[in-house]
Amino acid sequence: MSSHALRPSDYPGAAYLFVLLAAGFAFATPEFASARNLSNIGLQAAALVILALGMTLVILTEGIDLSAGAVLGLAGVVMGLLLTSQGASLPAAIGAALLVGAAAGAVNGAFVAWAALPPFIVTLGTYGMAQSIAMVLTQGNSVTGLPPAVRWFNEGEWLGVPVPIWAVIGAFALTYVLLYHTKFGRYIFAIGGNRRAVELAGVRVRVYLAAVYAYAGLLAALASFIMTARMNAAHPTIAIGLEFDAIAAVVLGGTSFEKGRGGIWGTVLGALAIAVLRNGLNLIGMSAEWQVAVVGVVIVAAVALDALRGRA
Amino acid sequence: MIAAVQRLPAEVAFVVLSRTAVVAGLIALLAVASPHFLTSDNMVIILRQAALQFLLSAGLTLVVLTAGIDLSVGAVLGLAACVGAALIAKGFLIAGIVAALAVGLACGIVNGVMVAYVGIPAFIATYGMLWVAHGLGYVFMKGEVIHGFDPAFRALGAGFWGGIPIPVLVAAGLLVSLHVVLYLTRFGRALYAIGGNPVAARLTGIPTKRTLVQVYGLSGLLAGFAGLVVIARVNAADSGTGEELLLPIIAAVVLGGTSLFGGVGGIMGTAVGALILALVVNGMNMLGIPTFWQAFAMGAIVILAVLADVSFKRRYP
Image (cartoon, rainbow over all chains, first blue to last red; front, side, top):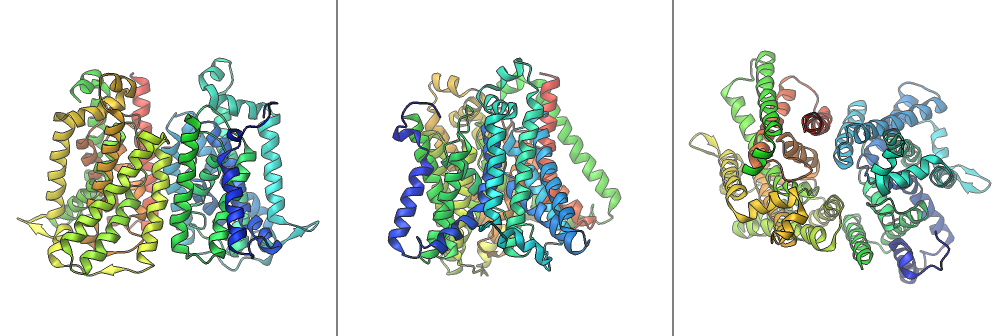
């Protein structure tokens, strides 16, 4: 952020949406602003924030990852199956799931970087493939009977702070350092800004691009631990559609699909705005059916306003 | 397309030859692998499946020609099918058909306005529409299933005329009309021009924004129509209708050789793409491969088809 004073147009749409929604729901129902509910929102938002952090890096390179939800589902299923039917230890299962996430991301990245295919078509293809593999592995069923230790990812606490929040803090810190304090991060912005120039400067753009998608896959696997622990079961379709929330969080957070502009603070705000929206709609008793449509409309409208504002 | 053929003879030849080889290869393989494959009953099944697939992918082909994308086709199809089904099941046949088409058209026009006038990238605008349409479908159906339609309506999806399945006749009619529209009308030529070079298209006087709204609207309208054929075929509609169709819908278009970068391709290609998909699905069933693998096959086909075309173009520019 540059040194001049912030003008209203410098804040991403997520900031306004977040304040508007929080004030609206606090007014509509006293339950909303209770400490219990606020910590609930944080827990609900955790997996989304982590997924959206990876999505931010992908979008900064002018890419997209439609496979994020499916890869999350696959990683969770792999962990679940290793723990139950294979009797693996928790660290081994976690490691394997992280590996699966990163590998799926690397496949995305390889097709985007070396074959130069449009990212949305590559990740749409891998969405189908990841989903399919998870379905074949589980025969379409949930993986239940997980060892109690898994629930630590959702219920555990350290220094009075729940584990999912620690996971978010860890993922944010890692992404922050990667993005703002390493060569890798500077190249991510540069690739989105002017890929050709970066290539001509002798940077191995393809390697970095593949690494971005692999990192996004890794974070999807991390998010899968929280979701699996929350449901106390792994299922192939556990996060289908969560990639839409993640993309929306990134866009609302002010990261643009063009020119490598944006950052991860806005993404966190965007994810929180979406979590507040879903939580508040629940509290005021809106049925699950309506929520899908309302959330979709709010997000599309906010993105449209952002696009209109950006042109003015 | 004449101009495109003159400009890119090698690329077009590659698409035509590679797809012919794929169709011939699949038929030969399946004929050897399964004695039931070459029966006339199975041919009818494959043709009807290909016709349905073509109806699903026809509108998207026009959008992709403009270098756009419509990820909402399956969801809009589902929403239109649910609205139409509710009316048709109550005996309002014409009203149901009109309502389904109107829902599709309205969703498509909203997509077009978001892309052309608001300036949202097409895949984001239509991806948003995907979730909005799914959500409205849930709201409308409340988890219920509508089934049991008028036999006159069901004929649209399940009937025969002169021994040929009616969906095949409908698809053939749509194929010919869209082919004529693409080649011989100002609208059709404008789609290629916009996909080839939007700035040049605008400077030659083509109303690019209006044309984009029209093409997304047409895509929505055709999705609504496909929704009617689908529910006539399966004799039921629920909020899940159309949910699993996104991948196959795009797969048929890219298998048909229409370039995702716009300006190159055509509706005939999509018909061939639909035939290839129908052969793949039929073959997987014949060989007893679990249906869980079908999404994997669709995903792999999408990536491989685009990969083949992009690689060829890079090697022989």
